[in-house]
Image (cartoon, rainbow, N blue to C red; front, side):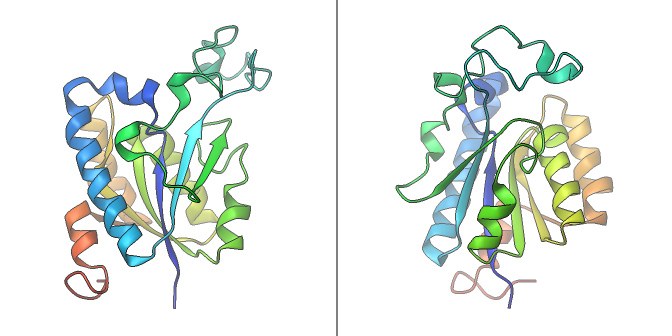
Length: 193
């Protein structure tokens, strides 16, 4: 029997704010998925990207993070790196801080998941072409079973989101809407497909 966890990735204030009007729909979808997971006893694990004061982890060779070097925009204690209050962790839920794009890079996520016996992941977060793609690839290489919540992810480019969901992700994961995943939870509409 597999043990599943729901990963809520990079749904933090500074990233959610970039979605503009699309944020409310995404946050409502994620809140539904989180509520369903909690009710079913599925662990919800939060992942955020953040750096120590001064950003010593930000290499000038890293094109994504080098632009932030010297600023406090992604400081681990700042408001931009805190999980959005609409989907905030409950007491006792794990919050993992990562230092790169993948949820596994520069974090203890793999240790946490193995310790709680997780072998299957449900991925949701911002951005589809960033943390979701990178985490999916690394999780597949680590032999986790994978599901991606199509409407539980968002990207700045809707076409990139569509291509990943329709053409790339299905090679390594089941792609489902949050409602399909919720309806497939034992005790909430039937068994998993």
